[in-house]
Amino acid sequence: MPDEYLVEEDIIEEFKLFASRYNFNYIIAWDMPTYLTDYDESRVNTERSISYIDYLDREFNVIPLAKGAYPEHLHYSCSEIYGRGFKTIAFHISEYLYSRAKPWPYIKDYSLTSYGYMMHLLKIVLEYPFNEVILIGGASPRYYRDLIQLDGRIRLAGYTWYIDGVKYQLYSPEGRVLNLKDRFYLCNCRVCRENAVSRLRDLSNISLHNLLINKYLVEGIEDKLCKIRLEIYDLILDTYEGLVIINELRVGSRYSMWRKAFNIVGRYKPKYLIIMGNLVSPHDRVSYDEYRDLIETLTDVSQET
Image (cartoon, rainbow, N blue to C red; front, side, top):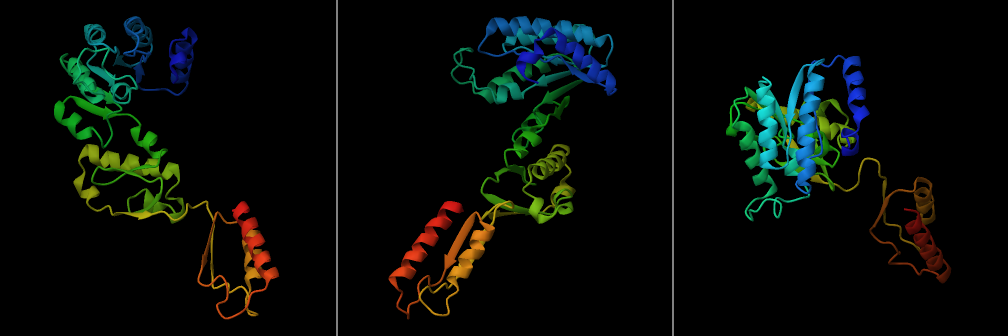
């Protein structure tokens, strides 16, 4: 949800109606904008998030969300949440992993990266004796190993698999993130084998593939992963693009069918046109008029494809 909505007073009422209508078992609350670039906003919104947790906890099963862009704000949030008797807490780590604002100069430590600062804040959350710590944005091949090994109470969640999928980022069984912008793939996982080859590069399919691979990686289901075969190829054209290949036009020969060939090209208007072999007959004399017609035709085709 965009930040400007999170701070509106009536949004929480709309959220309550939505959660009631669909009988949510649990809700994670309440997200508020807290960024390194605005110390006072982080403090005020951290305090407001606690009041919203109290408000929603009267009617729903709430998993409280720890907030605060600065260590002292996060300490306050965790302390207030633990003091209310909650045994589970959520922490939105992707806010820090993908933040455009780097820790310096807001945090006076040159050595801190975004990842390092996220880990610094996470360790603050882990100081409190919660039974479970849900890391939103942590279920990604990029970070899951480090996070799981950090503490046995950690649980990974989020929809990074979808965000990556719509950006043509594909997860491999080995835990790599592959860029599919100019590539094609074949895969025998449960998701991909149920789709036609022409649908594999659909963003929905890539996302669902990522979700399945992510599940196997996070849960350590090695017997499933080792059976998945993923092959990557250079992409000549996408499934929605057209390609026509013409061979041996031999313009100038009385047997040439180059005009008919280009009529077909004009009818289909492919994205790509490949002309192979002899464009001009090596054994016949080509007239000026035919050369002119050929050049005009090629010019028209180049403007249409």
